[in-house]
Length: 372
Image 1 (cartoon, rainbow, N blue to C red):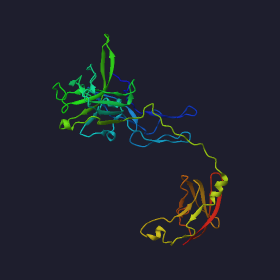
Image 2: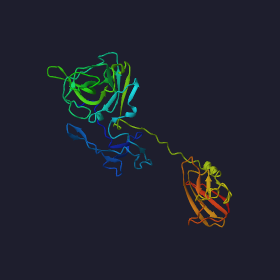
Image 3: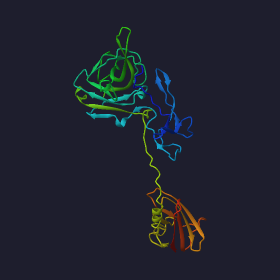
Image 4: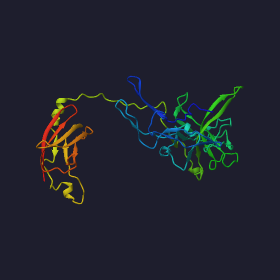
């Protein structure tokens, strides 16, 4: 029976909203996005021999990019296609020992939360409340036929993502998987299944407690003796990865466009330099000279450039030599020229004039020399 926390989440699209105008500005789904953002899940989930749930989902292997909208393009990665155990964040918080936890292949993806197994000095810290034996599956998705109800345990399991009516973390119920089928709980031979339950009342008013799904099993079979078992106040944390849910949202803010201070920009153009100037072809610092075994092109560097501009280079007699389109991050401010003409020919020695022009019309005219 479905528990209110049972939510199999699959990311099949995203929306971007302008919260200042409460308007949808971008949406992509498998139906309307032509790229390779979405994949078909070839996994099948088995329940009593029936294959279930094949679906399409966001590509979780690669970094993805949206189309351009309102001058923006978002890069993002998706954490996982379905809820799954996170081994890197699962383990002892306090305590130690070979405790084994195995997530249910069939049902755990509906409960991808974070859980704590908390050990106690109370031998009845948890007493199994389940009294209805239907809808119980082991971690492999097979119907449980050998299980024990009404057992007591010296630990309890809390769901750290859910709070009950008293303000406490919700506790999971525990049932014994009677692996050796001797109809009694043997901690070193049997396993324990953890899951949520649902309570309904019968016509007579008797509470009927149903199993809502196996989330994971707890296995003490790696311990060799009772002395090695976990001690009171030891805590083992079980963490799951999960896709984003419809309740998840990420907020980002774009800054308004800043007006360009034309006078300041014109002043900053005075800082533009050509390095080295003059350029000496036989300079020992030139890579092509210092290491003759490298097929390294000669290069000249323009510094203190605005982020966007056009550089045109002419001979002293006004013959157009080459053009460089600059589109840099604002903090970079440099660009290299390969010292070739537009036709790909080596330039000759001499005086050259360069002209820098910004998109807002500011200009600088200066010169540099090449000595060979």
